[in-house]
Length: 167
Ligand code: MN
Image (cartoon, rainbow, N blue to C red; front, side, top):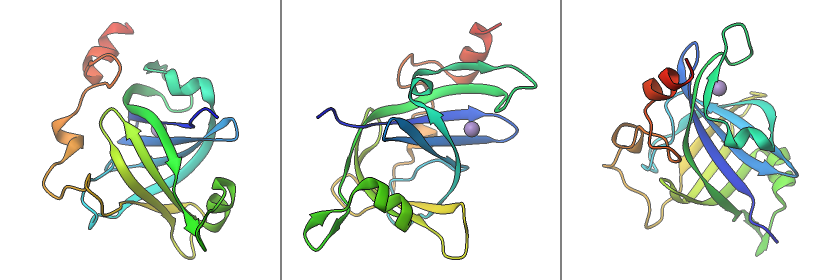
């Protein structure tokens, strides 16, 4: 079976954020992460669930025109595949059940991000989740990838360069 994909799109809209998307049953389940992912297991990054996107959107890098939903510049900040690693009683919990239960664990194999991450739904909230790096060999409290790796994982462009090219 083909591995499901993930993509993180850096999105310079009303406010800069990182759209974290994972493939589930032919659509991209999506969360907006204002601060972006962290490699430090002590960080809990707010991840606000947003609308599902079409699979084809994972390949989009460019500018969404003014007046349209999500207007602003979009960069493919990271991309790759993921593996569902959420277990219960020694068995992998199907990803759809993880989504419903509000507790997802996956291993990312991206260009920038590697290793285990958890997405955990906050209690008493319908769309606020937390994105947390799991403790493993890829965890790193000192490296801040969001600032040290600001460019596109596909074209190596900055947001400004993507914006210019669309004009
Ligand atoms: Mn967005």
